[in-house]
Length: 86
Image 1 (tube, rainbow, N blue to C red):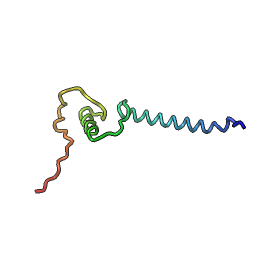
Image 2 (image 1 turned 135 degrees about the horizontal axis):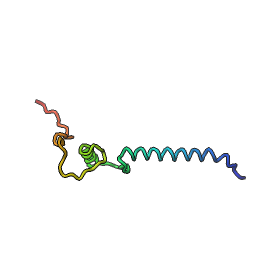
Image 3 (image 1 turned 60 degrees about the horizontal axis):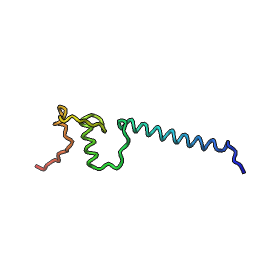
Image 4 (image 1 turned 90 degrees about the horizontal axis):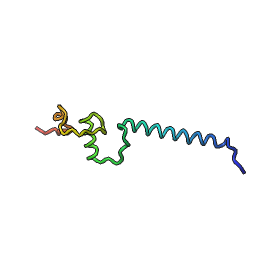
């Protein structure tokens, strides 16, 4: 028994809309990430290096090959000092 093609139109629309939504979210995430793909399973070292890169370049995924840090970077320490009892 054949299926009328009119019954397949809503399924096609649903599949197309899911595809458009997924592609749009992927593009937005790609643009927010500096044009590179999203990173998966970041460990503490990766997060620390990404934070350092953000403090050096102003972008989370930006990297620089300048061997000398910009002025003011010596005071830009991410370490938090614990409060000592006096």
